[in-house]
Length: 125
Image (cartoon, rainbow, N blue to C red; front, side, top):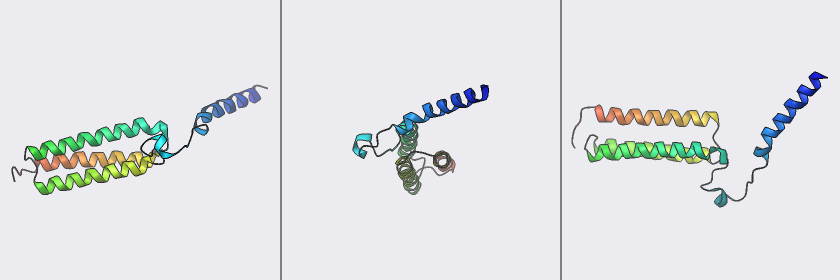
């Protein structure tokens, strides 16, 4: 009897956890905002967008201070734009673990490149 009750309780808990995911509205893309398919990912996507904005600001400041050359600036901006496009494409259908890992790695790579370009000893243009 105990086994049956435990099984029923576990099944009920599983169904209760899955119900919000199956009840979500898929409406049109404009109503969901920016084309993201899973509302639960919005906080994560917003965090990535904020990190990319901060990296863009670091790139701009480095260029204004002439800590990086124009070629390095263009290259870093292109890498940042690629990262932004990847985020948009990944987030369209919700972020899975592999995409999150990829975004984290790309952000770390861009951060490292910005540091390296600023420290490579070339000052001025």
